[in-house]
Image (cartoon, rainbow, N blue to C red; front, side, top):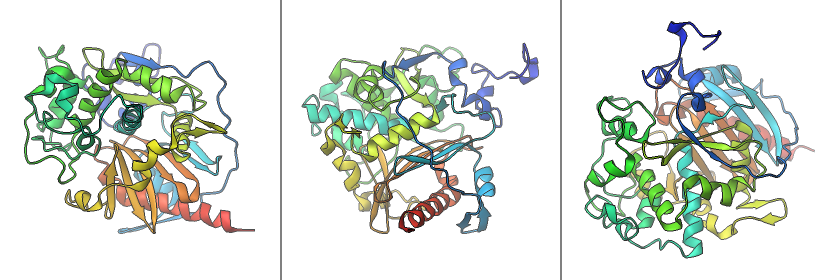
Amino acid sequence: MRGFPPPVDKRIRFGDGSFMRWPQTRWSYNHIEELVPTKSVWRGSGSASELPDAPMSFSGLSISTADGTLTWDEALAATHTDALLVLHRGHVVFEDYFGESGPHLRHITMSCNKSVVGVIAECLIDDGVIDPDAAVATIVPELESSAWADATVRNLLDMRVGLAYDEDYTDPSSDVWRFLQCTGMIPARPGNESISIAEVLPTFAKRGEHGQAFSYEEPNIFVLGWLVRRAAQQSLATLVSDRIWQHIGAEHDQIYMLDPSGAETTSAMTLRDFARWGAFVLHRGKVGEQQVLPAHIFDNIFSGGDQVAFAAAGYETLPDWSYTSQWWIRHVDGRVCPQARGAYGQFLYIDPAHDLVIARFGSARQAPGGLLDPIVLPTFDAITELVASERSSP
C-alpha cells in the first residue's frame, strides 16, 4: 500500500479478501479503518493519562520452549509480533513496534474484545439490569428457538453453552468462517452481503447440556453483545465509552468493525490504550484515587473459573487454566492471571501479584492462539521473571 496510488498488484482491499492474506495482514491489521466501516468509542474530552517510562533491557532474555531456547528477538520474530508493551508497577519498561505498526495506529484486537464485553455484562449484572440466572431468550426473544433458548446468562459468560458449532480456523469450510462472513469481519459470499448476525444466530441448534464442559464458540460473544445492547438499550460503543474508555485516560478513540446491520463486532485500539485497559482491570476498575467501576464486579475474573470444566475442552497448551466472564484465566504458581486472547496473536496478560500488564499485537500466519502459546507463554514467563527479580533487587 505504498505509492500514490499504490500499484494495482500491491493494493490491499477488504472485498477481494486480500486483507486477510499473509503477509498483507501485517498492514491490514493496523489499518482496518481504511478498509471497512467502523464506529468510534469516544475517549472523552480529558487528557490522556501518563505512562511514565522506566526502561529495562530485554535483549538478553532467553526464551525456553519445548523445542529449544530462543533469543528475545527470535521469539518476537517467530510469533510475528507487531507491537509489544510491558507495564510494570505503572511504568512502561518495554515498548516497541515492528513491521507496519506504530504507537498512533489502532490494531485489530480480534477476540480480545470478548473480555471488554464481559466486563460490560458484569456491570449490568451489578446494576440489576441483567439477571445472571435468567434464560437468554427472556432477554432476547428472537433466540427462543435456538441453542441459547434455555442457556443462562452465566452459561453464556463462561462459555458453557451446549452449541452445535464447528470452530476450526484451519478449515475454510467450518462454521466459524461462514459465521464470520455475517459479522462483516470477512467478505460475504455474493448474494449474502446484507445478512447480519441477528439473522444467523437464531439458526444455531443446541447440542449437549448447558453449564457442563467449557466450550469456546465464536457465536456466544455475539449473543452476549446482543443481550447487553438489548438490556441496556444502548449500543456497545456507547456502553464501552461511558463505562470504560472515557475513564482510563485513553489517547485515542477505540473503533468497532460493523456487521451489515450496523452492530459492533470486533474492535481496534492503539497498543498504549490496550495496556491502559489492562491496567484498569488489574486495579479492579480504579484509576488513581477514583473507583470508576465497583471493585467487586471483577471478583469472578480474579477468582478464576472452573478448572475441571475447562480441562474437559482438552487445550494441550493451557493446562490448569479456566475461563470466566469472557476471560481466559491462567493458574500458575499460586497466581491467578487473567488473559484476553484474540486470533492471530492478540494477547493482554495481567499478573496482579507482580503488578504486571503485557499488551501484545500480532499478525501470525494462522488464526489459533494455541499455535503461538509454546513461544508466547514462555516469553511472558521470562518477562515476569525479569521484572520480579528487578522488584526484589535493592
